[in-house]
Amino acid sequence: SVDVLTLGEAMAAFRAGGPLRLGGQLSLSIAGAEANVAIGLARLGHSARWVGVTGADELGALVLRTLRAEGVDVSACTVAPEAPTGLIIFEPRVADLTRVTYYRSGSAGSRLSAAEAVAAFEGGAPRVLHVTGITPALGDGPLAAVTRAVAQAKAGGATVCLDVNHRARLWSVERAAATLRPLLPSVDLVVASEDELPVLVDAGADPLTTLFGAGVGEVVVKRGGDGASAHTPNLTVDRPARRVPVVDTVGAGDAFVAGYLSGLLDGLDLIGRLDRAVTTGAFAVAARGDWEGLPTRAELGLLDAVPGTTIR
Ligand code: ATP
Image: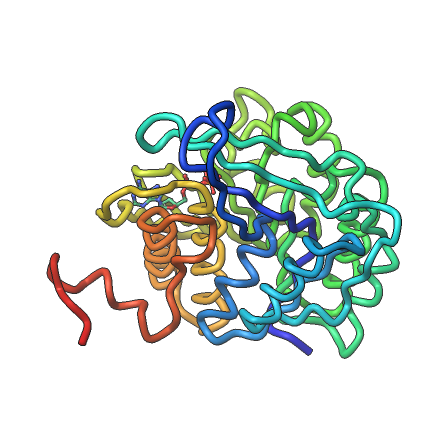
């Protein structure tokens, strides 16, 4: 069995150099929150399986080839013969502000179903199951896949991690709340941006009291350039963000999760987990692309080098 299992949609990612309406050149890669996390973990030496559905097209082949090249296990993935691989387009507008456009409705990725989730557990339960709030927003099939995976992971003794990852374009806070809150009794670790907490916690209620009361064991709250905090019922630790030149903030959250889960798998304590998470998050913002700049295990210490260092 693998260290980490995750499931979701991965898309072909086009990255423009400037405003799309001006045309010009685009670079092509892949993106998708869960795939980003899987790549981040594989770079750090953990075994990671990503499960999703791709189109029977060249962009689907790009998704699978890229994940394979990064050492991610795609053996439980399936190909949808009649739906295209989804697209995401990144359009840098000003400074570090990027506009993201999706072409994913009716995509192959949204054909994910409980069948893939069941196949994903072949070989035994993983140590960690990572799911995000994006997948259940993609449709009934993807929701069934997530529900099934969470139940099966729980039954197999895996640690279940939920990154709220609220996408207002896909569903409302109310719908996300109605879908994600029932999962909480099976979730061990919740990761959320501060502004996403209303998805899981009623206005006016204390987030930590609510989440621990629902059975969650660990809560990690991200605050972008202001860092993050990790909480268990009897311990809170805070870490500032690491100072790096900001090149492209997209993907920071996924990189952060990869670092956090890596620390968890390595048996690090709460501070150690959060330290690794802010480190991998910083790597993501300091490089172009969602996952391209993520560190290998040997590179984790690079941010401690003095500015201007050349690696020879
Ligand atoms: P995204 O949706 O863009 O992937 P997010 O909103 O899920 O990101 P953030 O809170 O923006 O997640 O970032 C996650 C973590 O990455 C932060 O807690 C921080 O450790 C790191 N990070 C984010 N922005 C910066 C920054 N400007 N400089 C250094 N580290 C950063």
